[in-house]
Length: 109
Length: 113
Image (cartoon, rainbow over all chains, first blue to last red; front, side):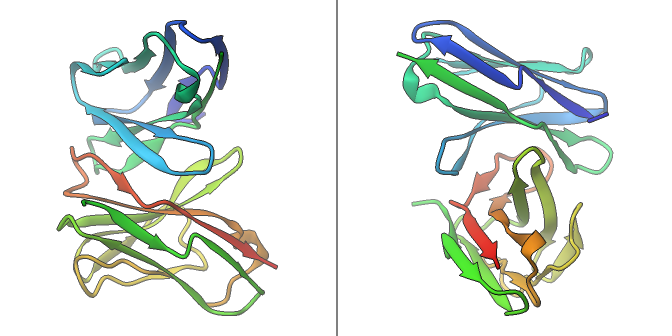
């Protein structure tokens, strides 16, 4: 069983829909990354958070350390949001990163 | 511009021919790491470095070498590439391992025939 689980694996939605991607983990962590990978490969860091909520434009990330769960939300989704979204947890024991498998998001116009 | 520069973007080589993928960052980051990404397996760490002359194995180090002689550079060396090392490789850097944003290079798509 993976220590970091993302859901759903794949998500297709219509432009304008509110999107939620979930990340659950089973180990103690100090913080969690959310990253975006567009087709063509480049990986971009979206958020790093250890508590509460962060917002950047239409993207919102939340984390509940005690419940071992984080979510990434996209409001007013757009086709350019189509990408793979990856969460990665920083273990608090040794600061190693444990990677989720990614969620492939497709936003249709 | 702050960036992680990785070269080459694409590389096709033959089994056994030594190759080096370069990675350089201009942000004075202490932590650098290499990942490979394969379909269905996600990102897996190959090696990482906490600072100059300090390197350590990640999850899949077999068949790879690294060096960190200068803070800005962290090359990945495949002494004798094999077809199972065909993959998409990423270099990443950050100020530290603990709570710092990660910066990624653009990736190197390696094919070993």
